[in-house]
Image (cartoon, rainbow, N blue to C red; front, side):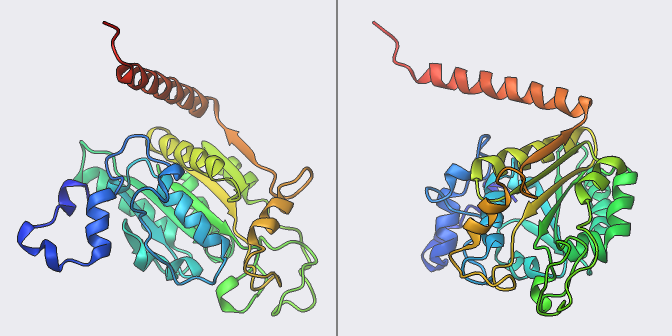
Length: 302
């Protein structure tokens, strides 16, 4: 998919849905420095969603989609869960895998795309919940990291099974009582970020989606490192407000509370030396490009 491929035939333009017409007119495909600030001023890659009102996952989706460096050359691999309710609305290529095998699917997809498009970078991004990532799919998740597959894995950490009634997951907090975990969880939250680091990920980040600028930077870092070096992992806290007894407008407050000093989702990153060098180069190139663009806009004195 690219800006060129969504150009409408003039003879059919008047009968095309208004949503598609807007996508053609304002989509950020091909924009080098696209980001979260484009939300609201250009066509988003997610028109609507069927998640619950106020769901933090819907916020996360918008920020992630706005932060993709090249959405026209990106393929998502999703899994069963609340995320699977959103992908039908997303204007980016995506595959729905079986529950838990998303990283295995992504491994084959990344290799196939590299063979099919040897001269064009294709980004593969896995996006799944904590059940698919750490419980049912942990084996295939870790095996892709062991093999150093070059794609990004994003986990929407709800800290429970959000779309099937509130069962406990490996990422649930110890002692938390849910609808279908009435006795409370008996073991500690699995340290998935530490597992990712030890399993070979070159870049690992843990954070909430309360601050869009942070989400944008992390997603871009993860994808850039995955292109050149190896697997990357991002764990995003997207609490299920329905299952933890919050109102639709309280999701943001819940995330902010969890990232205060001493909270379990204080932002943290692990970056290998090789990955840091790459990110430093990209940062300097971006700074130089923006400086040159700004200088080009200045009027020349007579």
